[in-house]
Image (cartoon, rainbow over all chains, first blue to last red; front, side, top):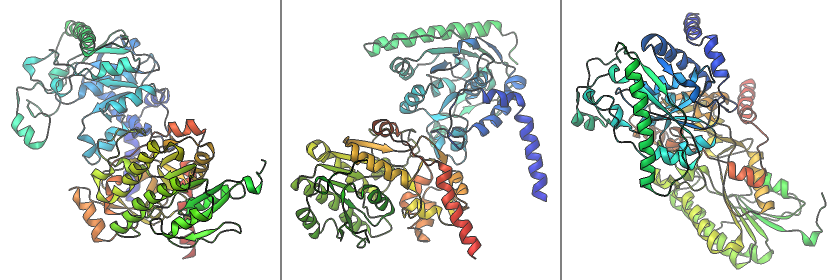
Length: 277
Length: 323
């Protein structure tokens, strides 16, 4: 009987998170799953709904996200969403994911690339997979694009998320992998300029030696371990199409084109921002 | 279907004939082909007209079968499991036995060889992408010494595949095969009431009904399109959910430090159903892309995951009712 009460509480909490609106959104996402509701990478609709419910609250109430250009995300078909990375914790990935999943123009499951050590962490690895996260292996991306999925990529990787506050809104070196994926799989790139995440966790110092000892990519000295409630602005740009190219230097030029577009979108966000928090 | 005349019937030799998969393959070929059954475990009881031999592939008696019958094709299903004999004997039976089989196939001009491999050759690692293609590296040897024989059988078959195209070698790498009578590790495991699971890990898995696998082997034989193929459905389920669906109770095993579950498995002698060398397969996924086989052979499994699991569920209900 005791457990009965507990179950009741759990159900109430779930009903609070998984609103009819969330149910409707997830039901309209064009994402095929197997007979038990899973895809090959472990994505699970039921667990995604709950997480989306919680993340939607953060999106609306905590970070008070302002978004423009959602119509640029195609309603269906393969797409690479490319953003600037910041904020130590991947809150920017979560918020872009919520924006895509709650897009009134056509909700999409946008898959995030996760760090390679996550699958070795009990519970967390499986949990991130259930929400659509996948280790950033090019083989995974190729398969997903061929299956017409939407993928979020931060080509700066830890160089972007781990950078110090004094370098905010300066794009770090981009990997070229995303450009090759876009060219090889004829995939449009939708750039997204993210403003505000830098202020969620401003890092003053990176304790690199300690991070190395712990096997972490970086360990910042931050004013708060909780992300601060900064206002976030997401500006999605027009889809960019690239045909295949002859060599790496041409690929670099194309990456620079994307970076230039991202800088414009970031500036747009910085201009419309009237207060940090 | 028109049955060919007695004289024009092809002769097919099937190894591992005592096993549940081979029995189903034989049942499908019987009548349309002359079937010869071979097993190293015991002399298989067969229907009239099917010669049956008890012989080890790497021992002398095996060649006599080739000398006696004009064999057109070999379906090599027989494999010694890790829990059946020690590592050395297993290596001899599986690797040397397969090499001898391929050499004899050349010597006696066998026109086709089907090799039954396993998804385990890819190895279970945290960094595995999902939907592994046939070109993915075979990393099982890196994970454990106990699977070296599976990887070596494959590389042997691969050498013969390009060096001796006249053998028409087809290598099939199925995912977990389950069903009535199946005695592989996964089937023995899911038939148990209490099943070990690693705390915090529930890798995605693929399962295939043994009838569908038998169908796939027969297709591979009859259509004869040499090459390497994954055989798997496009449906996926986490291990711990499969355990529950099969009516098993979970026995949580601590997963940290990584050596611990392996130590527990060896200390408690869980070789038959949760062997130390397979622990990583209960931790990390090996998900196959079965598209190439499905499209090349026009094959699609007829039984879904629920059909597969319900056999194990019912088995437990029957056992409970009998108590």
